[in-house]
Image (cartoon, rainbow, N blue to C red; front, side, top):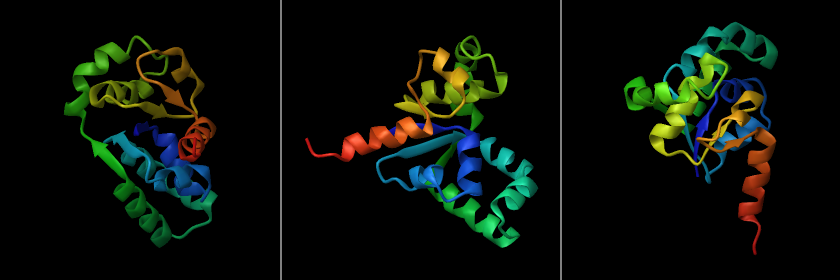
Length: 141
């Protein structure tokens, strides 16, 4: 399943070894994110280290782990869809995630931001919903 990952989900995976990190490890998901997502992580490096209670070295190791699991997509791949996505989201900072989802034909966007639910171009899963969806997919029928 092709999923565009919101930067906040990546940050959540950095802070705690919980549901977000588990979903990043899932072999049933292909993760994609705009290239600026890792800049966002770097911007909040100090906060992440403090909240996670980790060292600089552990932070670097987590970045490596996440970068191996998430395909980083450059702006030129989805820029032609920005004008389509901009009309569907009130938060302009989230427009690239929707544009990327449209550009790559994503099955879903994984985000806990509620305003993504108001657009209809790409299916949206919260962390909880994505966990439930994967659980149903693994259950024998």
